[in-house]
Amino acid sequence: MPEQDAISLLKADHKKVKALLEELEKTTERGAKKRVALLARIETELTVHTSIEETIFYPAFRDAVTKRDDREMYFEALEEHHVVKLVLPEIKATDPSSEPFAAKAKVLKELVTHHAKEEEREMFPEARKVLDKDELLELGARMAAKKKQLLGGR
Image 1 (cartoon, rainbow, N blue to C red):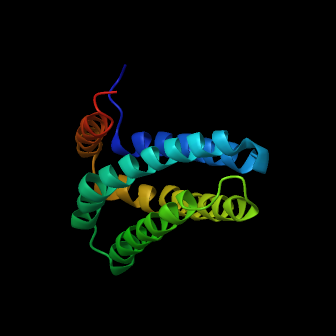
Image 2 (image 1 turned 60 degrees about the vertical axis):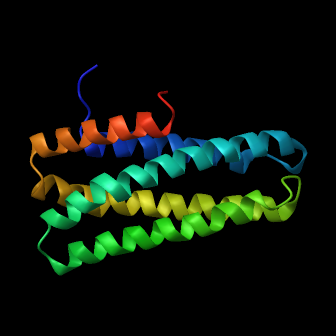
């Protein structure tokens, strides 16, 4: 398997999480067990993804950019992660067979989808301008290793 650069790795994560969120949104109150299982998978994926972004990709992006708008993009991305981290425990504490669970899951999906879209349309193209191919490959390798570690070797 060829090496994956940082942006390709993050986009693959986005695709996977969005698919899981779509699946969660399609569940009904009768599928409480499925909802709990899906939410656990989503939480794991988001926790690992935000960790590799916050510890590896975002600092590299922040250090490489020079424009104020790009630095603001970095701080906004961190705040969007913060909001997701606030919403997840609320959803987990909500009865999975209830309508409020469905509403919270929909909000989580909207937050994550918005965040991923902004990264893919704004941050990633800028990252490709300020980080060369070798830097992106090196970041991708570090992120893949950290991801494997966080997932317990999986």
